[in-house]
Image 1 (spheres, rainbow, N blue to C red):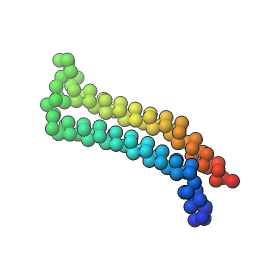
Image 2 (cartoon, rainbow, N blue to C red):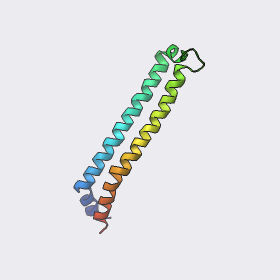
Image 3 (cartoon, rainbow, N blue to C red):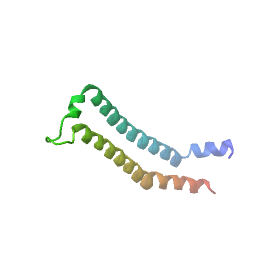
Image 4 (tube, rainbow, N blue to C red):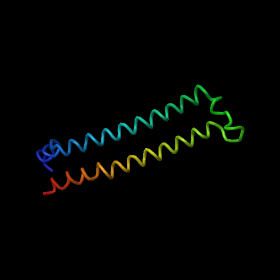
Length: 102
């Protein structure tokens, strides 16, 4: 690829939209996961007694529930990413590739 070809692709509106959507999706999902993870770490650091409390008098603690919720959140965010990538980003990527394959 020549520098002119790269510049032409970089300045194309569909390519700009593709980059913007990918950044927005990646940024928002990353911020959600970081907020949840650091919130969990802060909870462990400053309220360990809360995490050690039993749920309804049984063996399972609040910390176990929070840990499971963290894993489920990461699976959910992965599913959201896959859905958005398959339904929005990939078609736009294919469109850009078709336009410049000629």
